[in-house]
Amino acid sequence: MREADITPLGDAALVVRSPLARELLADLAARPLPGVREVVPALDVLTVLYDPLSMAGESLAAGLGARLARLHPEQDGTGRTHVLPVTFGGPDLGWCAGQAGLSEPEFVAALCAVRLTVAFLGFTPGFAFLTGLPERLRMPRLSAPRERVPAGSVALGGPWAGVYPSETPGGWRLVGRTDAVLFDLARPQPVLWRAGDRVRFAVADA
Image (cartoon, rainbow, N blue to C red; front, top):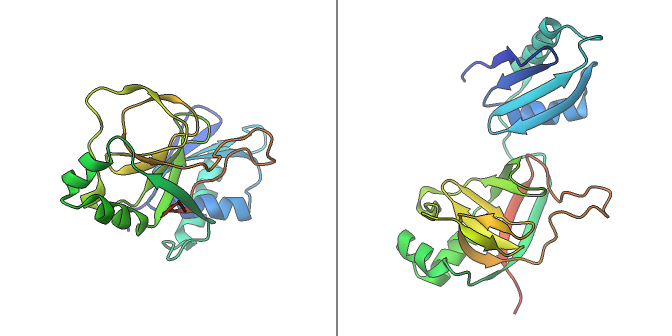
């Protein structure tokens, strides 16, 4: 496995690039390292923010490297699984099915059979970049983004799947919608999911 690359980002953060970034994130959540203030995940990358008055960057880098050396690729995942009921029939569903060489029902069945993983959050509060699409279901983005994408839209863009938590502009292909609430400030945990969680789409009851 490729070794980790740990580099400084200013005087109070380290950037960890590793195929085991997601496993390290879970490990740090379970066993926090002293001095670490926050860990921000991206795809195969963690940005580790720390208190430079209580921890030297070199010591933290050594600690992170030692943690990584003991980790193994996640086999079945330790995150939660979210099953999102989806009403398929978005404006791009037919186009996507044709692109994949499938009928619409076949395309929906193939998409619902995929177990996706939350790679990281971004773009807008509650939006998750879902990874794990097979090549056949990866759709090119629109050449020109829509000015308004309704909240709850289930979308495909490049290697990613996603769900729009709120109405925003967007350039991904829309294949359905869900009533799942992805971001709610009234909840103790406003964001439904976190990096490492698993996600499956399911056909909503009529």
